[in-house]
Image (cartoon, rainbow, N blue to C red; front, side, top):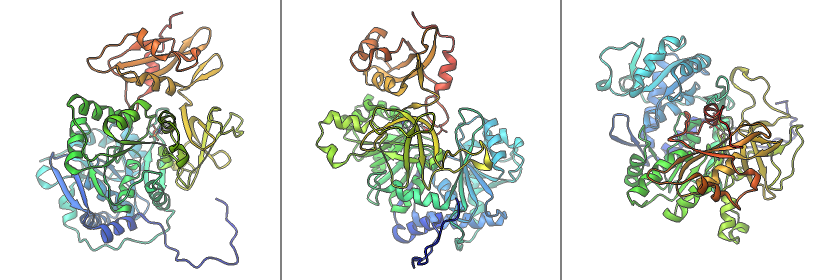
Length: 549
Ligand code: ADP
């Protein structure tokens, strides 16, 4: 950014850099006895406190120093949500190095590509990923040290990795005396690559300042609404945009944190939530399908679960409704992206909405919502001109703010900003109250005879049918209209529904010409590394599909 003018009268407040290390120090000093509970890869439940976490993070910071890891150098992790991963979040960034969280669900070649691009120096990994790490390690030129996140007992007798350390031994040998260094708050703190559905993944390089500001913003009552009174279980992985910032926001408010490890199936999640009295969670829609199925099939109830953030993909209104009506759980629909740390908007009601009939309120709550202070947004047409906020006109969604990327790591993709705004690649409407609704990703929009059809709307309607588990809508070639919608449906187990019944279900709910031209039933749909339905893969699968005429 250009140099800004200075006032002749500057404020006289302490100039204290916003650093990630201060968050863990704060959690230790003021909420030190509050718990962090983890389901470990080892299979058992581990519990300790924010004070213990801070102490071990300091030991890990000393351990990294012993490897001569320098400020700005990248230390990678390949791990589930667990306490050792959390220690790395603080030790790596707090000491001035950069935490690079890698998604283990990526193809090994892609992991190697990312690790090389990031020039990772050290890799910390969960023990169940040992075969995966061994498979890509020969292709990673820069990684000098591998650290397996386990104790001596779980180390392999021999291995293929050069310089393989045992995490527990490694940090046990270190003192817990460590002073977190002070440095410029704009220093890089962590690195996340986008899932790269098109081309190579690109890195979003967060700073201490952006991370701390995002943590404040995310915690706000009309953001994620979290406080020390909550018990918080992030289902969203710590390798997916830093678990949406929860590993920072939770210690910022001092709450109890519950980390589910690799067990993300409905049964394991339900048991952990009940056992630890979890009242708040966060995850993508596909993960909640598993939990709701488990709870429904076994006639279970939630004793403490009260609120959840759902985002990463559009949350079908039927899911919001089910959570509320059957289980009394409030869904906060949220939107964001890797490039936005990730939080952009959340959907909560204002007093004026409270007077609306329930169905109207539900319509508002299905939107992606209002910005969190710090983020600014607008919709523009292809010429870049701003479009009206009328809730109907849709356009390219642009954002700006202190926790939004200004460019990608190492300049990949060139100059990405347009007049200082980041183009999200999403298509949206904004209503007069400033509530945004995503109609589609621009690459998923269905263009029928020059007009756009929003695939999310069509999916949301189908998902409201009791027999539909998943609905994905894509555009397929049509000789007259260029593209027409094809709906791919996965039925709920043991429930039947016919094409005609589903077509009838659309009647009166949308403009007739939006109705899908055809419906196909599938056993499953491809889901990507962050739990999202891969529309590009579905488009490939049905590329030659002939629509009925
Ligand atoms: P990637 O782009 O790597 O898949 P992100 O997790 O950053 O990973 O995904 C961001 C995109 O996910 C957004 O640009 C948007 O298309 C989609 N998305 C996120 N939250 C929502 C939501 N609540 N509703 C609809 N789409 C969403």
